[in-house]
Length: 297
Image 1 (cartoon, rainbow, N blue to C red):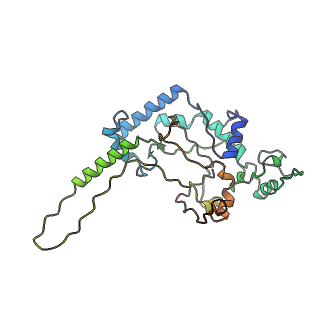
Image 2 (image 1 turned 90 degrees about the vertical axis):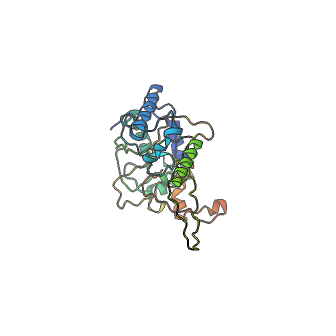
Image 3 (image 1 turned 30 degrees about the vertical axis):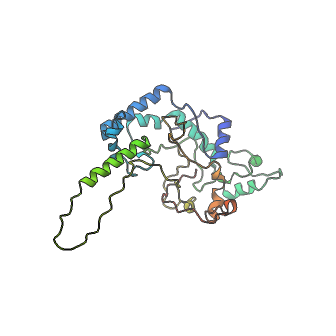
């Protein structure tokens, strides 16, 4: 896919560069959202026997669709037509191309170039060009977060990576189904016949019921120490795009957690051993990441 138009405003670009995250409203029309809702409902019913209008009675089918054991409501749904139509949305791709251009070095700049440019904070003249191709490297105090080890690339061309979907059901229903499944499993366990011998058999603990869905624990989508290691990496996915089909503007209706601006401190944080001691007094490093997927932001 290629693009020439620019749907994002300069203000939106600045927000992304500052925060590392950008929310764009109304990407899809009302008709497109309705079509996607209907398509999702049909996929759940046809493939997993889940009726979105009867989640209490059929929601247990979601277990078969989740390889994350319910974490985050993530379902292994990849290629139905309704989803591919959203994934290949032209406007979404043009937005992504804009962010590739503005947020990542794409003409082969070195980290030293950016580090030198960021040190020029007193307004003195510099001949170092920033990643946007102009000579005003003092516009921002630190552009080093834009660097990556993958070299020059065409920011107007890219590949679509097809990921899974998130489909959360109300917590009360998720807990209720989990409790029912636990009770059914417990009743199906064979009882042990009593022995004539005076042998004490330790009682087995009853399995604890567990909701079939739960929140996704805060985590990294990359290993910080291998953040800029190109070994055994055959693809680079610097931006994750989520298209939400529901607003979720009220408390306790789901959402996405992020740390605005942390991308600008990520490199120094890793170099310091993943410690925030200077900020909070806590000198304990955060736990290792399990994922090795290279998502710089």
